[in-house]
Amino acid sequence: MGRSGVASGAGIVRKRLRSKVPLTGAEASSDLHRVLVVEDEEAVAEGLRLLLEQEYEVAVAPTGRRALDMILGSPPFDAVLCDLMMPGMSGIDLFSAVKAAAPGMEERLVFMTGGAFTPEAEAFLDEISNARVEKPFDFASVDHLLRLAATGKSRPG
Image (cartoon, rainbow, N blue to C red; front, side):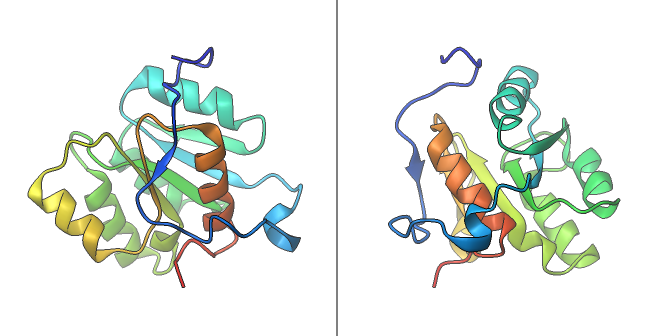
């Protein structure tokens, strides 16, 4: 565990997203992007908040349902870092609800996975093009993916 309380280690990005391209222009903007962290484990959520607030304006939602309310409220979030597997409304359910209520915003979700997948979760991740990181991850990986999502460039290609 790092001093932030978030497990650290080699960041593993399941889908490569222009990771070799340096950030320029809007991607490297010093303006604070608004990021929502959706995580049901309080210690992980708090650790992410402490880590990310150095570079972003951060809000935290402990449930998918609360995240949906916050996403549909205003002002809008530039990116959403979302745990995939949560009780109640999962990251999968949140993705579907956001896609239905605010089309296009679902593309700004970056998923965190712990490696334990249900067949439904694995099929979901295979179907979408959203970025994802596997826990444990490092800040550089998360930061890069959030900046890409915030600038609308989270999709490969």
